[in-house]
Amino acid sequence: MAATPIDNGPGSSSGPGDINDVRFLTVAEVATMMRVSKMTVYRLVHSGELPALRVGRSFRVTEDDVQEYLRKSFYSAG
Image (cartoon, rainbow, N blue to C red; front, side, top):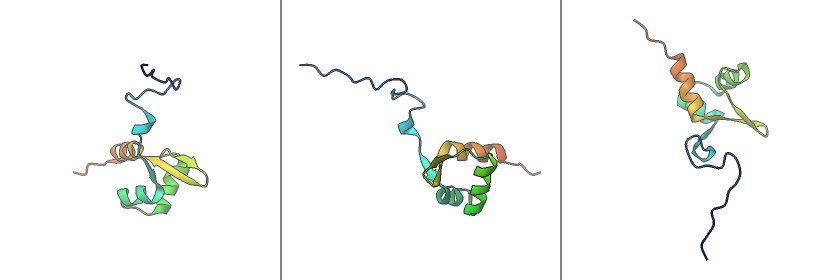
């Protein structure tokens, strides 16, 4: 008997943009990555400058969103 693939509905593909490929970071991890305080990260999240997902009482930020924020915020002096 051959195994039949299970369809988990829309969005269950394993292609680009798959939720399984997303890496979520804690506020502390984002702060360490950006070399700022956790309070600075909370301010960015609350102001809407850095998108975040609320999980219970804490926030999670995707690694891609952190990279995008840093890319947009990069300032070339000189």
